Image (cartoon, rainbow, N blue to C red):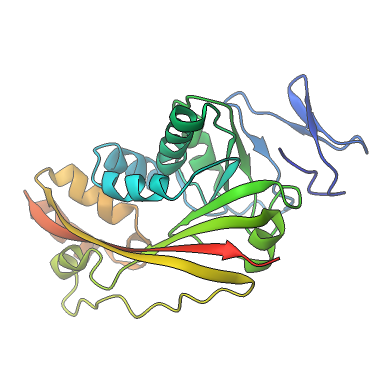
Length: 267
């Protein structure tokens, strides 16, 4: 499934490592993932452990189940790559759905955040699944090796996704809709803003369908409200004084609003 990030040749599992024909070797962690991020920096990449934990705890309560079902309905065959898989909620659901319908998983999860991939390893997968720490700008996957790619609130590098998709392969991309979490933002900020319009054009892809998924989530646990906020980018740029406003909330009706775009790669 994976290619070597150094020489770009296909790797195979040998003992506790992935090894390529040039003998570049990458150890498989005790959790089961492989780190293919070629970076000498000690800087933490992507989401930290707290954000991964908050996302896991919130998503496990099923608030985004309707989104997961929509994603799965657009996938008819594998292998499937979840690019920016986070802590694995969607990846686990896709794997189980694909396995139950076509008898094989053939899924792979990729994220630049090591804590997120570590958390994704702890989920339960019905069929074969592979996980790697890697960048969306240099996917460790072979040319034309994937039937479908999924990107949920994650960056998309068109050239890389186009490279790894088979001719006619799909990209399912999810982005926040205009009203997504507006009530949560109003609870924290004095001048809460709706999300700006989104440009759905992607070079090398044809847009095949677009869905506007919008519903209200009733959240009656303060921990869930705080976990939802902590798993968003707002957590990075909000001061403690504003964050404290969330602690007084015993319940909140919050809009979940997603745009789901399905593309076909042009080759």
